Image (spheres, one colour):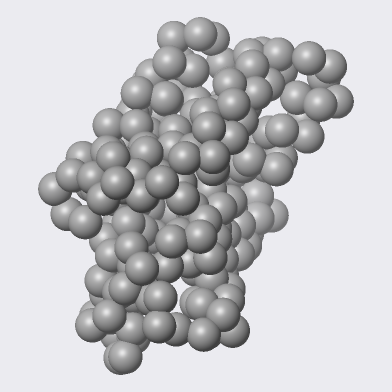
Length: 212
């Protein structure tokens, strides 16, 4: 794998983009899982945009503010000192987003509480990454994409959803590419990659089994 391709994979499959990828698959591939199969495509697209704003745009702008004010030295957050505050604040943003989707969006909350539940589970994963990052640089990229794999695989097994087989197969292949990219860039060692994959899969699978 070339360094350029490794950078491309790391950017496209950035951890903050994984919730948007996950909900894009669910909303337009199996909307019935979220209780939104009766919703129009335009309404589901509007919901996806709200998720994108809450899970990507808001924390991205927050991290950029931390960079501009000197709390974060490098936007790539390659050191433990750069990672801690952004992860804790991002977990807080995701928690607030989950709360808004669960309790404040009238007309949607009663139909799709699973949206808030899944975002809350991602908040838990981010919080755990932040705690681990107090002393060890676990791979957030692997946590993110493994979380998507865990949710898709868990839903497919729990509800026998055959429409998710090929997306799951593609996601597993992409997970391998992302893990290889992080190793190629010397961003993490194999232990940190495996720990990230294990954390993402564990939290997402438990969420599907117990809460969905």
